[in-house]
Image (tube, rainbow, N blue to C red; front, top):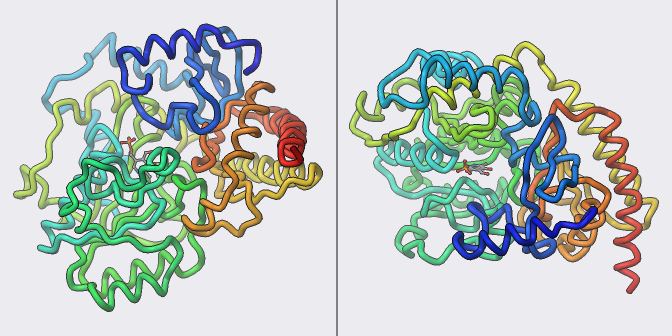
Length: 436
Ligand code: PLP
């Protein structure tokens, strides 16, 4: 750690007495890279400060929401104004919700109606329920290493913390529920076609991260998403794009806009909440109108669409729309990816850097990394050494090999240069570790 982390250690010990594992979400734990997590005191722009007063360049960005960085003035102002002039929650509709829905529908041509929820987990869970109701079928197809939140049917061969901590299929999920979920390998077009040939009439939906971010970043190969679109349409199943990470990150709207594919349902979260708890699912009117009270499929939420989250999310989206930082994010992403690959090469460490815009992962393996199996060939021991060496140089990376680095618009080229310089040293430490 940088200049000591005594307070973080104490905080962690205290937290463990009253919170399972000391954290409210497993991905925050440092088990895969060390022992205890840093406890964060504050964040500003691209930086966070821990409770010991150490400052770090932050590449986690709250796992995606903070594309504008910490405490962006426009977001802060919107929250303040909402608090001072409106309130935190009414359990009754507000105009803010309509404004948010209108903005999402404008940004995503596949979305005619959208329902706000409180998390990505709620969004995927609810989208799946709609798909099952719509088709009268129960089976779901997901891809190994993709993570879609922690609802029972989706915790089968899941990525993110479930993968990091070795529980991709969680105990506690009834086997009858898990049996409803079929899995295929990401990018395996033939595998999908085969599954549809044998069980296609039973499949309600295919859910996919259009760019996978939860086994580390894995890009869809040409033809993969197109096949999913075609085959689901052919068999009367719904295609669900889980754009909880990719929505408004890789382009205005979603990754679907970049590839020109219209899924039946889209799940959103993270960025659209501006750092407050949010999720959303949307799609064509005739499917979405199955949701209560328009239709019979029940789904509800006491705090759904609450004014504070809507204000923060609207401010973030308006800033993204006007500021259009995507080209700059792409450039910084490229700079960082190329810098990391070159620094690793110079140190004689084999890595594969996968990147899409401002999302990237440096896998400690020769590659290519194109699915769960190739991702999990990465050397997690090497990542641990790298992570700690970067942390010691003031760079806060995701505490797992199987997560994405998130660059924000608050990062600057000089931050990326600093990161690459730190990585050059960190890769040398990995090399020494390999040699010992
Ligand atoms: N879907 C994807 C692609 C995610 O990355 C996540 C969370 O990281 C979720 C769904 C679940 O979202 P939440 O953590 O808000 O429940």
